Amino acid sequence: MRQAIMTEPGKIEFRDAPVPIAKEDEVLLRIKRIGVCGSDIHVYHGKHPYTSYPVVQGHEYSGIVEVVGKGVTGVKIGSKATARPQLVCGKCKPCLRGDYNICDNLRVEGFQAPGVAQDFFVTSKTKLVLLPDNFTFEMGAMVEPAACGVHAVGRAGDISGKNVVVLGAGTIGNFIAQVAQASGANVLISDISDFRLDVAQKCGLSNVFNPIKESLEEAKKRVFGNEGLDVAFEAVGAEETINSAIENIEKGGLIVVVGVFPENPCINLGFVQDRELRMIGNLMYKHEDYLKAVELIGVGEIKTKPLESKHFPFEQYLEAYKFIDKQGDKVMKVFIDL
Image 1 (tube, rainbow, N blue to C red):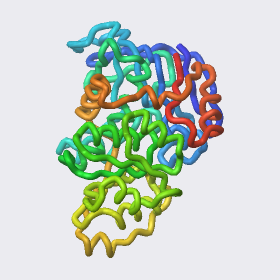
Image 2 (image 1 turned 45 degrees about the vertical axis):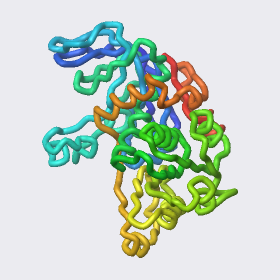
Image 3 (image 1 turned 30 degrees about the vertical axis):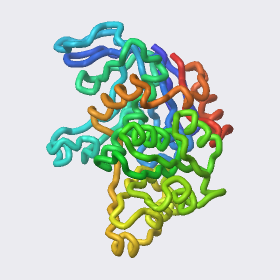
């Protein structure tokens, strides 16, 4: 089978590799689509702090069940599927209490373990997520980032009827906003890219603003009047946006930190203390988040089509990265087709 290996930053080599064998409680998938994530681009540039080379990338994907291992029930050959890319120990305190997404020994396929950039890939039954027959492979490949949105919103608890702002309208921020809206929240989403805001509106997120043109304070008054903001999701990973959330949230409000910060931000903890603000972290997802993402995509509560940007054949893996670099903020989700 074909396999793509990033041997060093900016360099991908292709090789013939043996087809993996599905052992007991495992399933062999024929990979059909791979979504390129922002973290993949960090690896491409040699700026991902937890990835070494060589590495087989790919963690957002969909495929077809090719072989069902012994002991696997409820899975039919030919079914569409995806799977969580997490490898966890099952023995540390987070795992034992059910929080395996923050396992002390967490490894992620495509980064600290081989990913799916190959024709066939083996995964365990416990991580497998079956997809409806009417799902496109593109929809299936976007279950992973959609599950990030589901998990982030879940961290905020019941947000029905609450006023919510999502800072950042990239793929993850877009999905957070869509899930929040599907959960009954009143949603405002921001980005410095008008292109991303246009995509957000095509996804049914009507309340948008560009902080270059309008401050969060102005936007929240325009959209929510004097009601203020109850919950903020920071999905950028920048000092300016986290401080904007702190300064504009209502007293006693909640800030969910989703963005990955390349540098430690300087934030106003005096506001956090004095206003009894709550700040909580967020990482990846759990299996139930995947299932919820499939459900929401299936019923149209999460729209994925407006995020589809461009397709590249497997042999042009490197060209896909170059395209993303060139397009900058005018691209959402790029796919690798197998």
